Image (cartoon, rainbow, N blue to C red; front, side, top):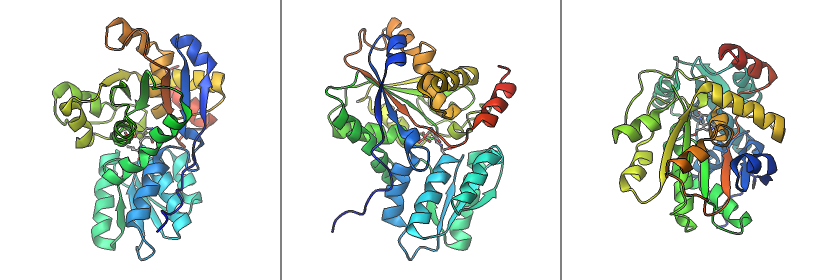
Length: 324
Ligand code: PLV
């Protein structure tokens, strides 16, 4: 049987002259901000829902900082099944409205994503809803791996490094799978988080899963208190060159603003964390420390993960909260 049509698009892959000038090497942008749901999440969630949420499903329930919910609501609408999205109170009103516009039922539970997830799991028991996890499931990673296949089809040579943001680690696991599949196992992956939403960095430092006491970063879509265990397994296996780095919320915000100014695209703080790797000189610093080769063996690929929790008013709000 032919596989069902995917929900995601083959996203634009653009060379950035401005970023290349800054990084001193060719930089390419994989524009996941162009996906129908506003972020890469639709790749994995589309794939997962096609596999586990058939027409007989009573509906899907997803716990989300926002973007996994957007992907779930979009896919459920296309599959003609009801979607319930549980968000924490830290998820901005802006995205709650967008979720409703996608036809989803939105409920607020707890302060951070982990609280919302407890409620989503409860609803699978009480209401028989199909659980859609935002980052911790092999089917999600399989779906996200399509990003790497698309990049491979567009790039003449191996990248020198791939940069991405880490929340719960689903994007990272998908990119690792994809890179193994296309023979890019030796290409370094630079994982970016913000201080205060740094569950992966904390786990890498500790050599084991760590649960953060709280999420203090404004990058709420990176705000899982615990990273998925597979992400740490890749570190323990030691076969891939995975580097974990942090930036401040202020640096992520500055990256969002510079990206808007230079590339004319508005993304979330969660995505700004990855962009800050170039704008705040993290790449050069790592090269100086001998942790990335000089020069890189190929172009730098930035996964512009996107995000729908942003507009000009939200940008203004973040500027105020972060004193910029
Ligand atoms: N956001 C998840 C988890 O939130 C969500 O529910 O939407 N960039 C953007 C724009 C994101 O929305 C996310 C995840 C990430 C990056 C990180 O992806 P992950 O979780 O697969 O590492 C709490």
